[in-house]
Length: 340
Ligand code: NDP
Ligand code: MG
Ligand code: MG
Image (cartoon, rainbow, N blue to C red; front, side, top):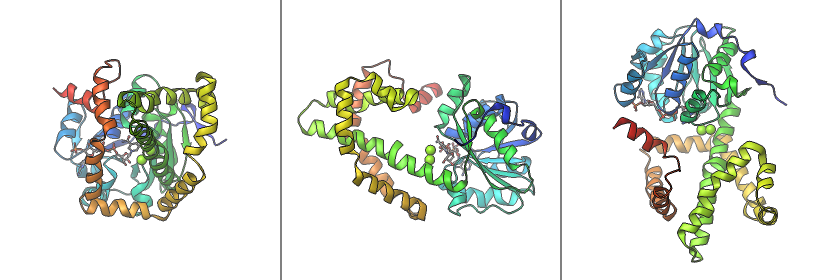
C-alpha cells in the first residue's frame, strides 16, 4: 500500500516562517484560508474588487490585489477557476514571483496542460483536497479533515516537499491522510473521476433510471425517491464500509438484483467508453476542447446547462424537497440566506 502521511509526518516550521497568499476566495479559497489561519499559518488573500473581496475582509483577512499579495508572499496558492488561471497568472502573478517562492495549485490542469508555465527559479507544488471546498471547511470545523493528494512539480529550494506537506496539514488533511501523487496523475485521475463516475456517470445514471420509470408511466414522485433521493443513503453506506456494507444493509432480493442486473447497466461496452474518455483526457483532447469552449464564451456549456435545469427530475425534486424540511438546504441557498 502507498504510504499515507499524518500529523506526525509534518514539519510545520517550514511554513510557519513564511507568508501564504491564497489567490481567490471561492469554494476552495475560503476553506484553505480559514483552515490555514486556524492551523497557525500567516495567510493573506489576493483578489480583485468584488463579492469575494468583501467576504474575505468580513472574515478578518488582509486582502490585497493579486499582484500585491504575490509580492508580499513566499507561498502562493492559486485558487481561481481553472479557466481563468492562465490570464490572471500572466497579468498579475508571473512578474511578481521572486526566486525561491513556491507556486501552488489545487488541481494540476493548467500546469500539466501547459496553460501556466512557471519560471524555473520557484518551487511548484500541488495540494489537491479530495472533496468540495465547503466540505474541506466543514470537516475541519468538526475536528476532522478531507484527504489530500500532494505533488512536487519542481523543487528549487530543496524544501518543496516539506512545504507542500505543511500546507496540506494546514487545511486539515493530515487528520484524514495525505498521499503523494504527480501533476500528471492528479490531473488525469481527477478529470476521469468527475467525468466517468462522480459527476457525469452519477447524474447520467440517475437521469436514465428516472426517465425509464416515468416513460413507463410510473409517478415521477416515486421515480424521484427511487433513483435520486435514496442514492445518498446507499452512498453513505459505501463511504462507511465499502460495497460489503451496502450489501449487509440491503435485502437479499436487492443484493441478488445487484448481482444479476448491475453488470448489464454498466457492462464491457460502458468500460470501453470509459477507456475512450480516459484516452481523451490523457491525450489532451478534452483539455483542448474545454479551453476552446471557454475562449468562445461557452456556447455549448450554456446550452446544456439551461436544458438540464428544465428536466422533470429537477422540477419534481424541487417540489418534493420543500416537503422534506430535514433535507439539508443546498449550499448555494444557505449562503444566500446568510447574506440577507
Ligand atoms: P471558485 O469558482 O469557487 O472561486 C473562484 C474565486 O476566484 C472567487 O473568489 C473569485 O472572486 C476569484 N476570482 C475570479 N476571477 C478572478 C480574477 N480575475 N482576479 C482575482 N480573483 C478572481 O473556484 P474553486 O474553488 O471551485 O476552484 C479553485 C481551484 O481549486 C481550481 O483549480 C479547482 O480545480 C480546484 N479544486 C476545486 C474543488 C472544488 O471543490 N470546487 C475541488 C478540488 C480542487 P469573485 O467573487 O471576485 O468572482
Ligand atoms: Mg476532484
Ligand atoms: Mg476536478
